[in-house]
Amino acid sequence: MSYFRSLGLQKEPFSTSPDPAFFFLSKEHKAAFCRLQITISLRRGLSVILGDVGTGKTTLSRRLSQILHKDPDVSFHMILNPYFKTEKQFLTKLAGLFHLEVSPRMSGLQIMEAIERHLFQLGVEQNKTVVLLIDEAQILPDFVLEILRILLNYETNEFKILQLVLVGQLELLPRIRSMHNFWDRIALRYVLNPLGEEELREMVDFRLRQAGFQGDHQLFTDEAVRKIWEATQGYPRKLALLCHNCLEALVMYDRKLVDSDTVARVLETTAAADMMFDLEPQK
Image (cartoon, rainbow, N blue to C red; front, side):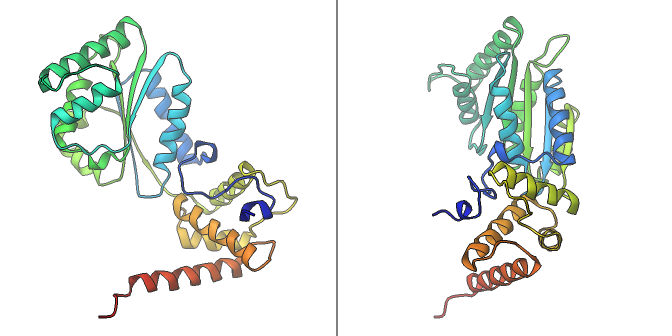
């Protein structure tokens, strides 16, 4: 039997996969999400969402994707791994996302022109909002950023034809800041920060409810939540991993409540395991 079922849960509550159903709208995420939706609906062009590893950027992206895919007036596309070796490779990928037929014999300029015609057809003639979201944007080569800058120049008197959303780690910030022609085009800039202790409690409870928990008691004591916050500093991915390990500990030791001692034991076990992995093999 899966451990979560033995605790009265229907699903895994603390998976680190970016499941939109478990997307907790903290104040930070709600502000970023609402402003992002407004910027896209007004077709203002470029949005940049940044944050440290594990702050929930990818989950936010999946939630946005889920909503925009349901909108018949939106043409939504996403790139998850944006590493490209050449300009033509990126343009070919982009053409494929837009379902354009391109030949290997076509030059990069010809593919670019085909993409621009397609954007005009969708964005102007059909009046659709064309959205391109790029995750892990910190690994984008500079030549791709330059192509995107050119595509952002494509506009009517009222709106940008392409709505570009870049989601990435903070290391992207100095790169785009140094590209003045790119930086000046950003309509929305937002940096996601970790959760505070109160919101961490809310996230734990939210995820448990989403997973089907209907108990009349809390699975995590307030002292346990405080210790989890101190250990994770509010980073959602670290929080999910630690909470998952705590629930596993309940099953292993036949207990019904995660208290501060449970968290301390899990942290100690995890630290010992990490130390073992860090040890160099004996020769």
